[in-house]
Amino acid sequence: MSYTRAILGPDIDEPFTVLTGLVVVHGDGESVTLTPGCTWPGVVHLPLYLLDALQPGEAEEIPGTTLLAHTPTPREIEFGVALVHAQLLRGRRCLDDRVRLLAHDVDVAHVNQTTLAAVLASTRETMSKVLRSYRRAVHQQDAA
View 1 (cartoon, one colour):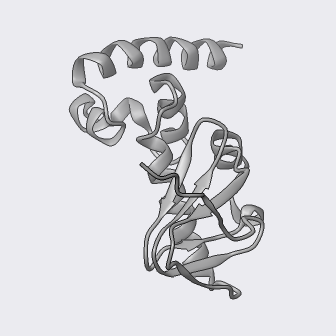
View 2 (tube, rainbow, N blue to C red; view 1 turned 180 degrees about the horizontal axis):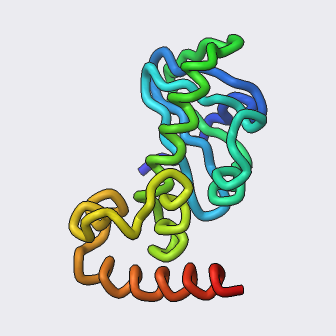
């Protein structure tokens, strides 16, 4: 068995688009995978709640990856941010954290539990338990 060295990827502070290959942006316990056609918006374009959730540190790429470094359009930035958000919703963070991450865009109290479970890579039963504690926390915040 041979060891294949990791290839350091592009600077994550700057935007880029993956043309071929694959780039993984590593964070603190999470990562985001970028396949051909995906644009990394650059750290500066990520909202604070996504920066906090990912805590990006570096990128790696597979052999043969080609990238386009450019100034992304506002639409490319929007799609890149959406990609990061979607991947973090199904990531390894605890389910409570992923519910709070989803709540930045969705009123989770008014979404079917089975649908929420599918969005967050969980089960309806687990979602039901998590939502009870989430609602209590929100109620306590509103009362304060």
